[in-house]
Image 1 (cartoon, rainbow, N blue to C red):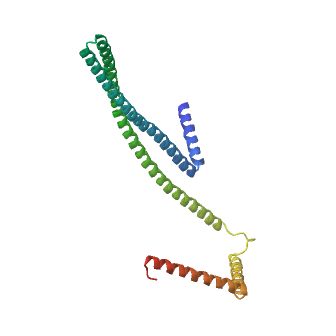
Image 2 (tube, rainbow, N blue to C red; image 1 turned 120 degrees about the horizontal axis):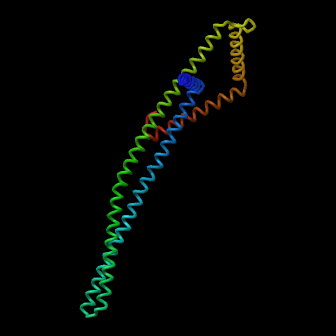
Image 3 (cartoon, rainbow, N blue to C red; image 1 turned 60 degrees about the vertical axis):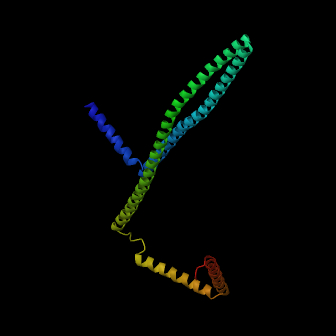
Length: 238
């Protein structure tokens, strides 16, 4: 029984929260959360791609180490051979040891290059996967944004309909006797329109009105001349 009451209480709180929450706020919150998720994904993808780029630089540097160790090992062997031809056993031993040490360094450098290339292969796959994830999420964000605009439009329509419903209900409830009638309001509006038109007519008859009309004609003539000039530059007929 207690579990049932708890379930009822949770359902009631959920319903109350849904009723209180403004749909527009919910829509904007969903978009903001999607944007944050998209930015986090982009940041992670950037790190993955940066790791691939770093490996490229490390492989290049390691390859140079291999080349340098190989060349120095060759030089040590040549020195050893020269000492052998000269009968200098001490130099032969020295250069052979140097060549052996360089050969070990060469082997280590080659192993390092092989390891880096293996890591690079994995990094390339991870980078491509990251880019695909960013592209997919970006498309989802665009779809969500478009859906948001559609939902906001529907919400606005609902608000307008609610306003209309409220207006209809107000009219249906009757008009207060102390309020002016629609005929009186219409008469006042017509009177204001007539007065405004009369003032405009009087203004046109004054020197100031004539001057304003003249300026308007001059401006229109200058605008027409400018358009004719642009048509001529474009080779269009006026």
